[in-house]
Length: 394
Image (cartoon, rainbow, N blue to C red; front, side):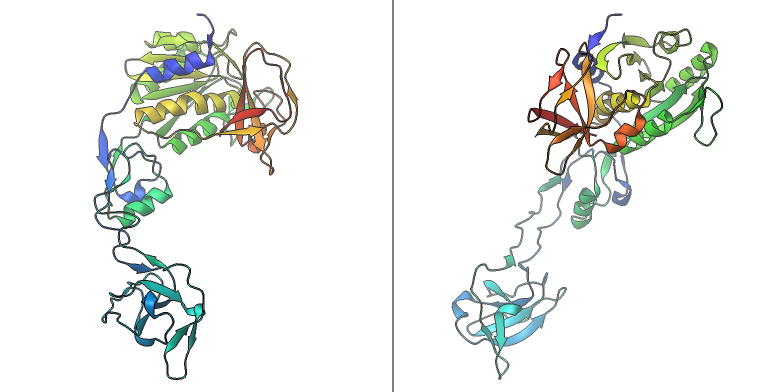
């Protein structure tokens, strides 16, 4: 199978058009990182009344040159009893209703209390300090649209509008398998020629971050039958299966053949990208299956750029990753130019882009310092200080 471009690979993944049609209704306090399946509509105006935005006195603008009699105090949660007419004012706390007849709020610090108990405005009038009824949201307004990945700020809006049982998309089930006899689990001390399995923990965390549900199937040793058994089980139990390692062309790299044995139709198995060349993707009648490289930087980036968008699409999520256009903070040169390069970078305090110290796709700690990645097209060897680049945040 021929090597394809990175953009072609991404198009193939996204055109697979696997979507979850079922939804469920849940408590809004449990909806973080879920995808909204229906619009959230406000059941009230916000603010629900003309509200004071300061601690001060409600009065009429035309009376600001006069001494004003204070007729009542209105704390937050209380309702005004007396309308404001000529020469009168009410003391109103921040967030409390502004009484009828008042058209401005003057701040306490801009007033002076006179000997008889009246107050006098001593400041310079600049604004009325009143939040008008419905100026933020009108009853019936759509305040959060379907397809939104629910974040803490959305939960606050749902609470404010009484939308406590949102309907959300079901979570895709994503199975994770690590392949390789050299791997041991993180709690073990590696022996000679062994390494700890960091990919699975990383991928499970990435899956959780998207709002999908991950299931870890352990380490499949370099045995084709054992690998076949666990891959077949994972396909039967999940919407997406992610296998890391075993997708190159070594004697013990048989993930692609195992995928085909389970009924997966492989759509690509080599991508012109660095890191991540041996990334493999195929479709089974029951699941989408990714074979990701075993090196941790490769698996992290290919998940971010291919798997995550598919999981979002499956949930009908409209979220897109943020890309910033910023200048390079230093010159950058690479040795090989035959593939698209994904280069981890940090954003300096001055807003420029600095490539992080990166020794290759096994250098997992390089991502600790990275704010994002830049894409350097094939054939381009150098970037100069000041060149504008697109930074895809990670």
